Length: 254
Image (cartoon, rainbow, N blue to C red; front, side, top):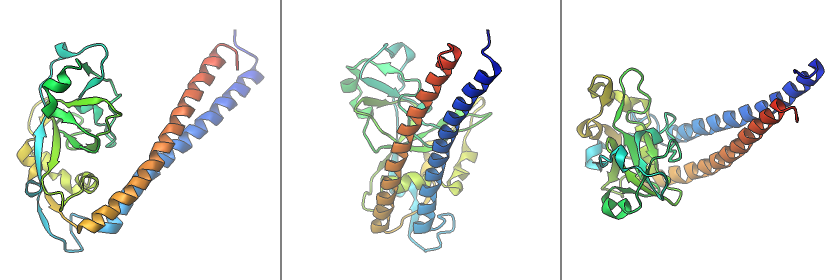
């Protein structure tokens, strides 16, 4: 039996207020994402035109690309401290989420496949996507292991910076997210899936600003990331509260 209309309205108002708070947190996170791009353009200008006239070179001059191992679904176990880092862990917004549909590998794989282990701060890129609706092809993200062992899966590329005096990871991640970089996607081949080759990615022309300026960018972005972490935690609490309120409303306990 439905509660009286006045009670329904009261419940709806409580849920609406909770949803407004959630929406505000999501809006703040979106603004913080935009802030990182604004900082990038303020310090470096548009890398497509390189208005400051800094040195530029092919990505291959500074980086190499390492592909992951072809782990099989039969390798998976129910739970362990070792996870398979797959393309789906790279979210379309450029965030890294190892907890998204996690797939666990036996812990002894950590030693057997140690050459494919990822560390905090590694930059990885999806090398395959769906042809009908590509969302993550070439999207760079920074790995956060959360203290777990992550092993790189096939068709996920790890960028290995060979000249650390020229490029910082934080700068490179934002650089590869710029619109002009996406031209290499036209080389992607395949039917249902589109695949990006190592040579296609490493052929991207990158602007190389002074190291001191890249460090300043990393410092500012680090501050933004701390704010984003706090906002995500707050949003998670609000999501849990909203779910609890919905449950209580359904049971007539609100």
